[in-house]
Structure formats: structure tokens, C-alpha cells
Amino acid sequence: MTLLLSKVAWDHLPTVTGYKRLSVRRGVCLCSFSALFLLTLMCVIFGNRSLAMAAFFMIVFIFPVCLPWVAIAFIRRLRVKAILRSYPWREWPCQHPRYVSGSPATIAIPFREEFTALFRIIPFPIDLTAQANDHPDRIWFAGDPRFGGVVSPVGGHYPVRVVAHVPRREECGGEGFELALRVGLVRRSGKGTRT
Image (cartoon, rainbow, N blue to C red; front, side, top):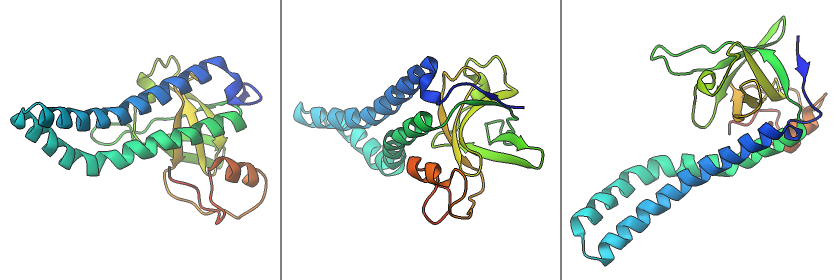
């Protein structure tokens, strides 16, 4: 059983507030890389070579690995907004399987008796049960079950992007395909997007 909560998820005030917090988190993360670069520049200008060298090595080792992920996450927050403005929140039962290490792996949502979708939270996996979640066995979902969308703990206050755990290719066209294409859940080829 699913509960339709509003015409579109964006109509729900805690969702808009949660999205703004997501944007701030992603912006701060991106700006922190700029701050590290400015720290290196300031150290060089003011002659503190040992600190400048340490900051430079952090830039050399951290930038190539982390900066692309942070930049993609910052840009793709707009896809989260498009999904929230196009799809309604629906409440579903869910399970949160874990890796052996205990970190969150996927979210399993049984959309129909014969179809349970497995989703990964991207780009940074988090434990949604720890995000002010009074109902860890339920989740709010906005999107297309075939390709992914946005999930939040019950209340819509912590929206995050999810994609299908295993990439799928679906028939082009059909019910909901054009909307999924417009908001960036699927490519024209029928394959779900991964970011």
C-alpha cells in the first residue's frame, strides 16, 4: 500500500527546506577545496613554506580524487530539484541492507508483489535511518521505480538521490518515460542515469 502525499514533492515545505540544506552542504564541500587552494597561495605569499608545502601535497593528492565527485554532486543537486518538482512523494515500506562493514549498501523498496527495486544513494552513501527517522521501515520516494529518483525519511526533510543498484535498460517510450527523460532519470537509449 502506498500513500500519495502531494501533487509534487516540491509542494511539501520540509522538502524544500531539506533541499536547501542539501545545496548548502554540497556548496560548502565544493568551497572547502577552494579554501585549501587559497590557504596554499596565502602561505606562499607570506613565506610559510612548510605549511605551503603540506597544503600543496594535500591539493595534489586530494584534488584529483575528490574534486570530480564533489563537483558532480554539486551540479547534480539540480537533478534532485527537477525530480522533486515533477514527481509526488509516495510512502513505501523499505529495508536497509548493510555491507559486512555495517555501512549502508542499498535501499530495497517493494513497489509491487513481484517487483522490489534496489537503489543506491549517490554520490555519497549515508544511513537514512540515522537522519531523524522515526519510521526506519518506511521511506518516501519520488521518481520512477524503474530508474530511480529521490528518497527521504518519512517527513521529506532529508531528500537524497538514488539510482538503480544494477544498471537497467528499459524499452523507450511507454508510461512515464517522457517525464523520466525530461528530469534526467533516463537517457534516450532507455538506460537509467547513474548520477
